[in-house]
Image (cartoon, rainbow, N blue to C red; front, side):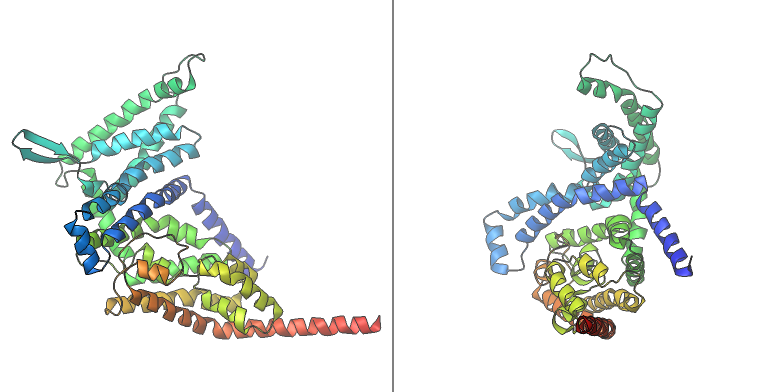
Length: 436
């Protein structure tokens, strides 16, 4: 076996083991499920805060702004609640257990450990759950509670610590009683955890996780160095035929980048300065536009500059999907996978486009993205305008030219080779026909 084949096999095995991990899959699937309500809430936030003074004045004067903000309050601002349920649901499903019961118990546990606020009124003291811990700020606590609750539920079910009903009892009733013992146990554990952490300087498990884990990780993921590293890992995995975007960006990094986006969105909604440059939408707008590797330049070169029939046809077939950020046709059709001629531009193009966008944002040429969650398939220009400014859309067009420049020389090389091969094949075919 050749060295490169051994390396490929090792990387594929590691990536497959990571991607197949039950806990990673549960978090990844849950985050994909909550994208829908987050997008809905983000769009309503955008509608309530369009940067048009006459429009916002009209909404404010007629009391429409609070109404438009309601969907965001009960979608993006409760993302941790949605996440804790679906993480527990999908993890229990991984072990062939009832996901709905696990999700419900995770919700109960999450609310037990979430610190209550108090407000004194003329009628007495009123307790309430702050939205702070139900949204992005409580996301990591929700992930931990969802995983641990589901795992405890699975353990109790596997050990037979349940109330078993006769076969004549309807399944819905049996399922309810089967969850009683695990439910009591999980609730007691959550209660003890809440009591213990209330006695600490942090006051709650949520605050501890946010202070000691979430803030440092978000701070690290929001750095330019982390951006470079994430792109390199994604590109290298794709080079070996592994879906690096799903594993790294949508798996490991998505909760971190989503939290950064939500900080921007909340600031945007409040009319405050946006705190973060990086976030998931930064990748959507500036890095994975046309697909991983920012391959729009390569596709345009193929479609309009290729001499070889092979790449001209591929480019014209891949162009429509590339507009919507789907580039598997060019990734596997070129191919980019295991093609040493394409490795450097494939790694370099997204780093170049992202670096230029980062610098342009840092020096104020373009505004920071408002954090509105749009589908990853949203075409450039449209995504730029939605994310806050026509200047973002103009920058996206400039980045297409950057992609063209990065891919130009490697494209000319592979196109020349393909053209010469096609020409040689035609000569052989003509010679055979002449002899016949």
